[in-house]
Length: 468
Image (cartoon, rainbow, N blue to C red; front, side):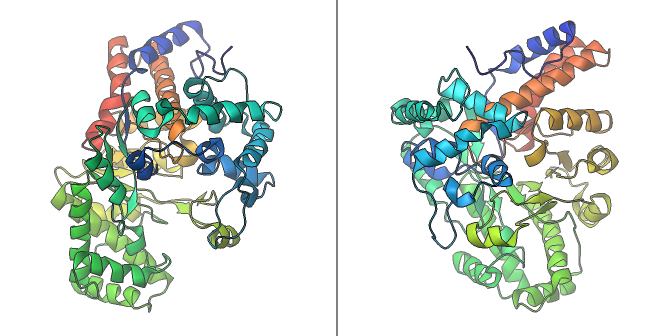
């Protein structure tokens, strides 16, 4: 018995299903390119066993615990750490039992398929997780985690990961990445430059963060030019540790291109805490253009992830901190918002800016036309709430006729849950092959072309877009 239907996500019509299956078979064994995610580099630096099933599947995965919280489960009962170190459930078996008792909540969600894939393909489970078999599941997975073949580096190789990018803040010392490099292990784990803490005036501790940035770089961050020089040095430091990309999680996609004097005055205002909300938004906008200019200089790929209304619940943020499932999508403008940056650098040869969205309505109206015109732009894959079969299908149907396949950037898994990586890539491969099969079946794509596109969507486009 298998937890997974072999032809899952393929079209129901027999000839299209056969075509999708053939396309999938041609790409299912390709290496995984994971160019953007949030796995912990410490896992691969130390290569210690994952502590227990709860810490592997529940505690780090906000896709999982946000669903349970939405049905009244207390986040503390799921072992999610509190900012103040306050009491939370510490018995991993109790956390696992609570998780298992709520499996019905995940029916028809992407999480259900990702979890089933991990349970089946990684740990060999043959029956669905439930309250009744929670302890059996826990004991078997926990026993396997104690074996060498389930340590992080071995799983990395087993999953077929060619390269995995983590994401670190601008102030990170990248010590775990140094330890990986010094270990002699051949797995390729690289970092990504995420400077939000020293770009966003609304980020907690912004002024102190700027002081630390100056100390790390020996630059005077009390001045505008010293601040920009500090970014250049940190970007160079990240490149020394393998980084090929930057990442920017801004509330909006707004960009600006102020005259130097105005930019300097704005920086002084936000650095000294004298700016208001409009000043903070304008500064973030200016810094997107400054980061794009630096990408022209140093060749780093720029990712923009706008539109998340982060930390929507103040109480959850205060108790549990960032990235706890309460970042909610919002409507996002791109055409007007990106124009200042695109006027400045949008036609620069060699520049790559990968755009993501949580506002699906913008794909056909704004993003596909922009990427179909500006050589600097690529469309990132469906992200967060939309990296699912339906989300990927809607994305392909909406953008392909305008932007084509080759103005997109393949797939990335954007995950903190390591064992979900092969599951997420498998869903993306199946979803893309299902879409390509419909193009062949309706005479819009030749069969030989479909096999080439399937390979490109699975492997080459992400590798090329991120310069890997």
